[in-house]
Image 1 (cartoon, one colour):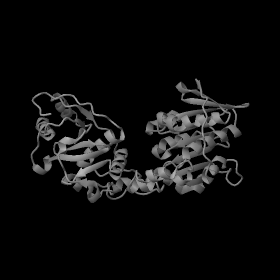
Image 2: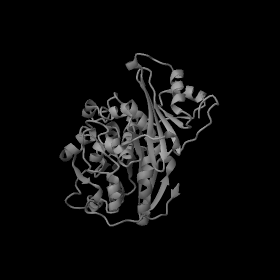
Image 3: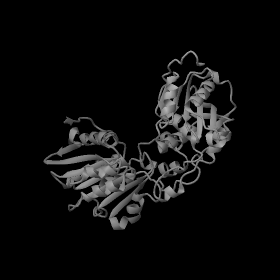
Length: 427
């Protein structure tokens, strides 16, 4: 077990934060069975909700069990428990973590309560909370959890005076949490408080403006405006050929290089080369071949030959579609340094939009297949009606190669580790 001894520095609370902090004791709201705080990112929801949750439980109960959850145990400990324990210690509580049991206890005066924490990442997560009896449950980012987990967790809170606490950023209007909770507040006995970033007094104007540049399209509407909107239309609606392109120059003068690859036999195979100058990555060259359109299918060796020609003496680490195992081995056998891409579609799209908006990546003005996909890569309307954010798996091969690079290199901060190629290869 570990006892924590740090404090937490607060800025003055906003009106909505004060409402969250006191709703369970205020005469007009204390009879609600649940509270829901949704809205934009960085609005101060999680910090104030988690503190209020523990203060409520420590005020009204003694020697009781409570539940808390994030999408994963790791995200819960990082985003919720770490700041929460500092806040509590700064207010005279004793916090003792039993990490092997995924539980912590809180003591103050003659009172002690126990808080079990869970990860609600998939359908199997509901099994984690079966059988336990709780007086309350706190859900951080509930919209990222399956309904089965939330239903099982809320069912654990059947004792008198139990309360439920939910926070999240918006998803689509057909998401299960929107339909089952936000659209049925009266039936559920839930108090709803909608947050935007100005409701967090700790954010400066510079930070507010910076966050507004991070998102485009539906992500701007959801994460900045805090709206439950449909993923509809073109994915890269932020694309602007006039401001995001440049006339290609000598590609051999950049400081470091990557090649990002989306591989197909009948579907198109795409290579995109990126060169860095300062803080900007230049998408300076591409290879595109569609077996279906050409009516000629080629094997791994043929595409590896095209990669040799594409490199033209340049040393670069290759990022490749994680499903292209045979082609990856072929390239590795030729001496290339190859890394599997992270295929996290929605985070990849968000970070790619941000990189485009902030000028972190610019494009040579002759990448016609990529530009065509920017205009035809769309959200799946049928999936949106089911409450899911998905893209249509068409006209996406160039966009996938772009996303692989941005997510792994610009977002994750990967550094190239280039091995020397055999002497028969140029570069």
